[in-house]
Figure 1: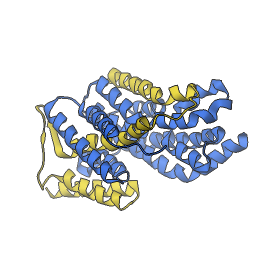
Figure 2 (figure 1 turned 135 degrees about the horizontal axis):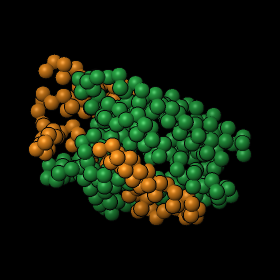
Figure 3 (figure 1 turned 45 degrees about the vertical axis):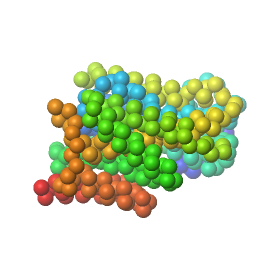
Length: 224
Length: 110
């Protein structure tokens, strides 16, 4: 079991630099958007889901309603249900008392590494990977919050654009089938329409939820 | 404002934990139904443009949001660069850095 934890850490070392830098970028941008370093780091520890944190920061900076931010976070993170459902059968023999803590550290990177090694994934290996990924993310955020304060005028350096840039880059690599393009285009257009019509930032959760649900009803599911 | 930030962080933490813990703690035996799996896979494809496109195309001020579609609008060019580079599978951080650089350059020209 300790050997498997170690294997999980070692197998994740290749991810450590990019997760660290991702955390650094998030920490820096969040501080520039007006959050305090402790808030940024606390969010990273308590939420520990990078994409949703990136989405929440410009919403917080724009003074969005707390409910809209929390609901948007939930929609963005619903993909965890997929990972948790895949991991669950492997964790039957795992010490039950540790499950609530392990659950908090379910993340895309460790899931990908663990499933690539064996399917069903090995729980202790997954734990090792989660330790490596969370430690490098939280260390990166801590460094970023200290660097972020150094830039006096973020907009002059185009840093406000870093938020949409991250989202567009994450999206572009996921656009594979023609249907993906349709979903993304319709969701983007609907979000623009809602944002023009309604005050606040409900357009993200509304358009994201509605368009993905509609597409799931229309498209035929792939065999599992 | 500051108290609100911790309230939001707490709410985000609870909402996110509710996506991770229930199925793992219940030691769910069966995979999710295929159509539910499909929906969960499609959510990022809808959420990411739903946040990104308005950030690129809309300008917000006290009066609300309005379309900012003009060739002189730097984020439009930044978005084109990011999409092209990401489609070519250029590294995420390099892509974002170049997109930011394009926006900064165009703003410096203006």
